[in-house]
Image (spheres, rainbow, N blue to C red):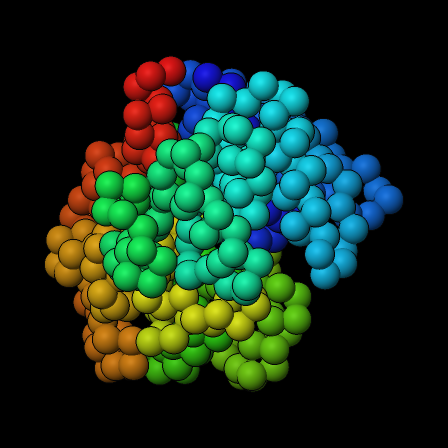
Length: 372
């Protein structure tokens, strides 16, 4: 079918949502659909060609990318959403898929079948009003949420019927990662982290571990220049703590291959851009990338993350605030290569069986994919 994905933010960018959107478009195309991704673009400079963008994100150029000019003003996201929905109708879309609820509401008003994917509760009056309109529309196929916790929230707060919600955790592409190869690991214990450095994402834990374990190298990939500068200034003298800053997604596999252990040290509150706490709903991309790389993971023991990982099966879990437990877990994996291999291999199998992007693409389309 003709599927139009309306992206809420510019691409390319350093945001993780761009990775997820690009991977999902590639996955929709891989299962046989004709996909066009529409994204906003601000400024006078022309965006890069679609093939170049796909290369940076490490996905095949199997779908079309269209940029709609959008001014950066208070109402511009909603104006963009309406314009994108109209463009989708002109393209002959059989289905509009989006993480932007205003775009879904506009598409449904245009009479186009719609799937809305939510990653957190609705923020703002416009979003809540748009969702209320969307729920009343026959054009809404269903709502996709990224965790069981978020499903429960939507059912309780927004009165979404059970049959209209699909839980689909995020994923990764196992094809771009090789199962952990001991010969690719750094010669000395090297612990890795990828992702943003927002409060609660875990840099606080990594800084403590680096201070406690001076014989171990910690490498951090990601973060805005300002956030990297902040943490460099906050950790003077820690020569075993290295910041790489933001890298294009296509560069991550070669770095993950070097790491002995990877960390997902989320705190009890995880604040992202916009100031919203997502700790109860999140489905972090890094977890699935770690799993795809076949790496041994030490992860925070939070209910939403136990939806994906099981302690001693495909990861080691530690209390978010228990620094002794984090140090013990990391030391244990450094000292036990066989355990590292077992946890990483099991995580890779679980990724391939449950969380590969094409599996998710079929899941979130539901009956639409079968009918197509």
